[in-house]
Each structure stands twice: as C-alpha cells, then as structure tokens.
Image (cartoon, rainbow, N blue to C red; front, side, top):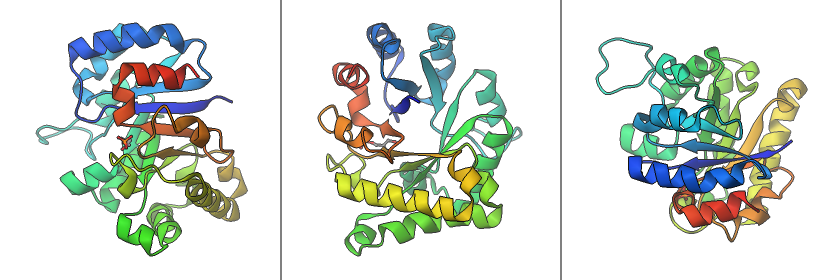
Length: 247
Ligand code: 13P
C-alpha cells in the first residue's frame, strides 16, 4: 500500500501558482511511490478539481469544513459543498485553527461526524505544545485529544480516519521532531488503539506533520509506523515538492 503525502498550502497560492504547480508536478504523479493529495485554500478546490479532471494519481483535501450544513453562517463552507467537488480528505482540528479560530474539541468532533457521513476521510490533527513536550507529556496529551472523540462517541468513530500527529512546536519552525520521538508517539497511539479495538486498528492511519522537507522526509516516511506526511511550507516550493514525490 502506498503511503500518503498531503500538501497543505494553508493561506497561500493563487490561480497563477496553481497553474504552474499542477503543470510541473503532473509529470511525476503517475510514477510516484506515494499517494498525493493537495489542500489549497478552499476557494480554489473547485478550480483545481476542473484542472485535474479526475486525474487518478492525485486527490484534493479541504483545509476545513463548517459544523453546519447550511443556513446563516457567513463565510463558511459546508461538508455538502465540499462533497460536491469530489474532495477526498478534510483536515480537522489543525493547531492553527485552534489558535486563530478558537476551534475546540466539541466542534472538531462535530466536523468528524459530518465528514464521515459524507464518506470523506477526516484527517484529525493532534499534538502537544512545547511546554508539554519538555515535560514529557506528549503521549498523554495526544491520548487525551483522541479520548475526547472516542468517549463522546465510541471507538468506531476512528474507523477509516487518518490521525495527523503534528507537534505544535514543530509546525513552521524548521525543527522537525526526531525519528525516535515520532516513532514513540506513533507506536503508542497505534498500541493504544489496538488495545481498544483490533478491527479499528487495522482501519486507521497515522501520519506525521511538522517541518518536513526534502532532506528529512525520507527518514520519516520510511518508518514502519508512519503512514504518511502532512507538509506545509516545503510543499509550496515546487522544486522541493517534486523532489519529495519523485523519490
Ligand atoms: P510545516 O511543514 O510548514 O511545518 O507545516 C506543517 C503543517 O502544519 C501541515 O499541516
């Protein structure tokens, strides 16, 4: 099974950039060892879906979805709208959304439920901050974030979802977590899920995000317990992203 690489553009890009980006990376998609997905700003999803014309070697990811389906919620995008344009994944609970948009556990859970209902795969972001990391609390914090979701529903909520371990202190800082740390966290989350339900264990994935670049990506993605990568900054550099997907 191919591992997945998701390019999260955050609040970057425009039509010009998209045209250039797709034209350049298109050549490398078919022979890539990875499944590739792109998360442009939501406003460009439709344009990109037309541009890619259902190219089977690449998929689209939404950076967010709203907790409502429709109604008077100015500025939001519902999961039905996202479904309309053939999006495969939705990033939910990114630490930047928690920080700048006050996203909380309750909303994260609602978004996961709505996304799953539409047969779109949620990518649930978890991860500790620098203080917690220094106090050796990474595992505890990650489990707590997962437990909230499980306890409010049940373990089945994790079926077919992707968990993205993104230590907050590593995002956009140039300091990726070291391999031992990544392995430790991914292992303990996998073991934890296994202890709760063996069936679900076989049906969820865990990927890593945080200062991944063309120099360190290979080491990280080749770990047995790393099912893929979520890349921000480096995925915006076309040359660098090609280096990654073409390796
Ligand atoms: P960077 O790769 O820029 O650290 O961002 C990671 C991230 O937040 C992906 O969602």
